[in-house]
Image 1 (cartoon, rainbow, N blue to C red):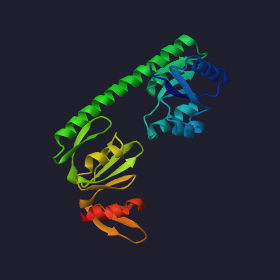
Image 2 (image 1 turned 90 degrees about the vertical axis):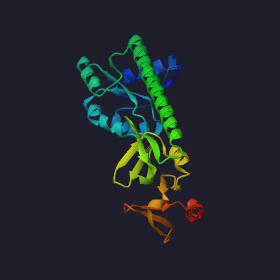
Image 3 (image 1 turned 120 degrees about the vertical axis):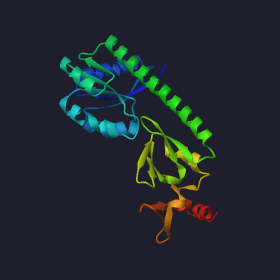
Image 4 (image 1 turned 120 degrees about the horizontal axis):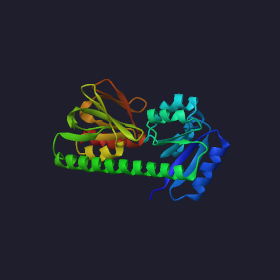
Length: 251
């Protein structure tokens, strides 16, 4: 059984106290790691602790700001909406919440809601593992080929390696910048692609960038190293990587 990390966004003291007590009594399945009154005031807390679940007061201000949660650089937390107005259950449906709980909260509905969250998370992990195995299999087949398998949010794409200008870290995601102007966002982090691409004229010039040296049009050494690419982008080479980079491009 997994323990779900949760943050409470609620301004009702009685509700917050109930959730704290439930977490204390059921610490094997729920760990409350932070509290705030609303999304706006709790956003930095969410970014810092990366919760798997948010207990959210279904107040109008939170429903307006709920889009802020979809812009996080990690998996969007599951939501359980809380309200003393049963009509707000429709809002829970609209924002794809795992559950809606009517105040005052009680143990039975709470335990059911938490198990729904756990099941939801475990199903996602299982699906992600299947995708990773599929991608690993594809990349193994194309190891000495011209393609790389890239997992985006809803599909797996085969990209021609020669068409990749550079890869950019975007939080836990990776953005592929291609010669035809397209941008492909992968759900895997940059470090995983560093290993896959290292034998194909690619070099990690910075913790945020892996570049294809075949697309470099100019290297500037004024006030540091900068690479200019065929699409006009200019990227810096980190100081600690400059010596190794020089050896790499000479090789």
